[in-house]
Structures are given as structure tokens and as C-alpha cells.
Length: 134
Image (cartoon, rainbow, N blue to C red; front, side, top):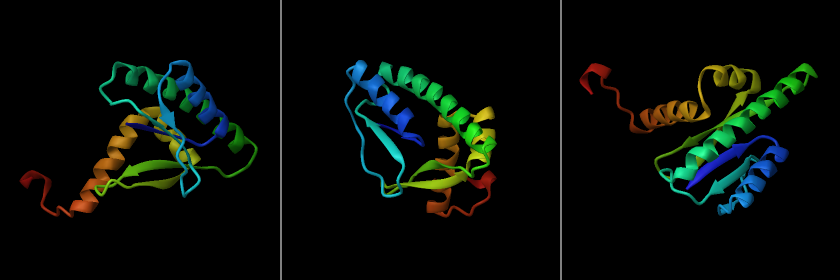
């Protein structure tokens, strides 16, 4: 299963419409923190997953433009990064929109997710050995 997070309901709807058009099963689960989620019933190794990731990337570019417009209007925006924990729970770390925009200029959403998940795993496992001894 793939999970996508959106910060604007218009982009979530656009993604859901695309999934319907492609006849891909999905759900829109409720999120206690108020984020807009889309869970897609495809394994990560499904060939359509790459196309979905590409489509999501294009929507994230639109999200970045929306955030820049909001910033230009003087409003403070927050985004979030999904963090997957070992007990299979998912939490969201709030991130200032400006910082997220800077991150997205040098890393893809997938790369940022891998980095955050690595940090979460290190925190949960409390491995204090030096890197050279792992």
C-alpha cells in the first residue's frame, strides 16, 4: 500500500480523480492531525507505482507554488513530513513551508521520507555505537 499526503484539498481531489480515471483502488482515511491522506491499494513494486509517484511529484510542484503564493501574501504556512514508526503507526512532523520548499529543491519527497524514516529508526533503536562499529 502506498500513502500520499496533501496540504490542499484541491490537490487531493485532483489525485483522487486521477486514480479513478486509472481505475486504481484507494481510500481517503481520516487523519487525527487534519492532514489530507490518500492510501492507494498498490504494492510498491507495481509498475503503475512509478507513474503515480511522478504524478504526485507534479502535484507537489503545484503545492510548492501555492505555498509560495501564500508566503507572498504574508500568511504563515506549515507543511508536514510523514514519519513511519516501527510499531506501524504514522505520525507527522510539522515543518515550516519555507524549509520544506528549500528541501524540495534538492531532494524528492521520497528521498526526504527515506531520510526521516532513517532518523526515526535510529531514535527508536537507540544504537549508540560509533558508525565505524556498526
